[in-house]
Length: 180
Image (cartoon, rainbow, N blue to C red; front, top):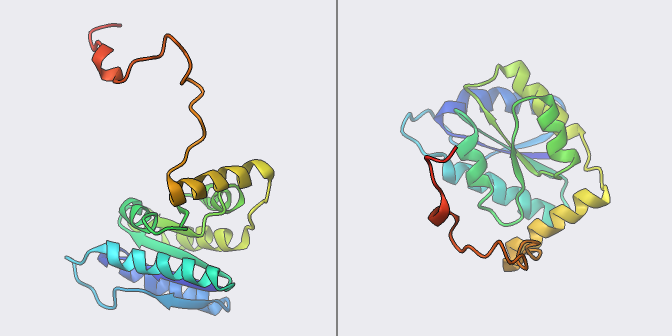
């Protein structure tokens, strides 16, 4: 499998170790940066490039996934999710790695390099790669709704839209912080 990697300075050492780990398992690893330590670098471009490469490969029929790293993994996940067609999940344990693939068909995961040991992170990545999408109808339906929204901004109808009591346009107008 082809694995695209992107990070920032906080995840650089981690990224290098993970790349060796994945290559030793026979994966083709493509590093989207950075190439050297710079404590002031910015993660968006590195993570977005990795995410774009995953989408491009998958569109061409290449079996590919992505992994992005940062201090917490939060910003890196947000950056990857800006790419049309990416479903990036923040992973912090084996279960979230497995569910990201099984239920959400995630094609990118994000991990906080300052939050986990190498052994933990590599086990999350290994599980993510090894877990297939379940294909269950409910999960496929939800992924389809996300893809439709990405394409044209369409959502399912709001079930509250016809309720007469629920006609407020701004809920903050009626919020009383003193009410118990």
